[in-house]
Length: 289
Image (tube, rainbow, N blue to C red):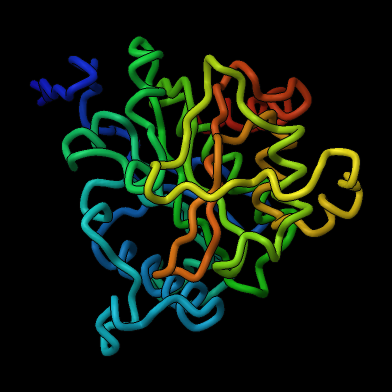
C-alpha cells in the first residue's frame, strides 16, 4: 500500500501525490548527456558541490553560510526537494561523478511539508496559491551547469527533464526566482524596466515582493527602453523563461547572501508557447510514459 500525506496550510488542504515512483528514471537524453532525478545521497551531494562551484567560487556567494571544508551549497530544503541532474555518460567513474548540471524541484506537497516554498522568503507566493487553490505548483530553483556544458543542448535537455517531470507530477504552474548578478538593481535598469513594462503578470497571476524587501523594477520610462539592448543584457535563464511564455512578478529583491537581484517567474503550463510545448512535449512523452 502506498503512503500518502494529508498536508494542510493556511491556504487550505492540498491534494498530494503518492511518493514518486520514477526516482532515477531517465527523463531525457541527448547524445552522451541524460537527465533524471538524483538517486541517492551521493548524487545529491555531487549536485550540491556543483552548486557551490558555480554560486560561491564563480559568482561570489558568501562562504560564511557554507562549511568551507564541505564545499557544498546546501540548505533545509534539499532534504525534501527532488534534484534534477544532468549527467555526461562519457565521463568515466561512478554515476555521481558524471553530474555536470542540476535544477532543484520543489512540488507543492513537499513545500508544505517543509513549511513553505523557498521563494516565500522573497515574494508573496501564498496569495498567488490561494487564488489558484485547485492548481499544483512547482518551484524551480538552484539552476546551474558547469561552464564547459553551458550550451543550447544542455538547456534543451534540462527542459526535456522538467517537462517530463511536470507530466508525471501533473504540475499546473511553475514558479521560482531568477537572478541578475549583483546587489544593485540600478546596474540592470534597462533590463529590469523592460520586464516591468512588457512582461509583468496580469492580476490573476501576479505576486509581489515582500514589503520589507521590495525594490522597484520601474527604473526607466518605457519610451527610453530599447528591447534589443535590454534583452541582450538579460541573463540567459530569464530570457529562456520569457520565450516559454512566463511572466514576471511585481518588484525585485536583493539577495545579499548570493549577491544577486531576484525576480519572480510565473509560468502556468497552459501558457507555455505552442512552439516549445510541442517540442519539449514530444520529447518528454518518450520518458514520461
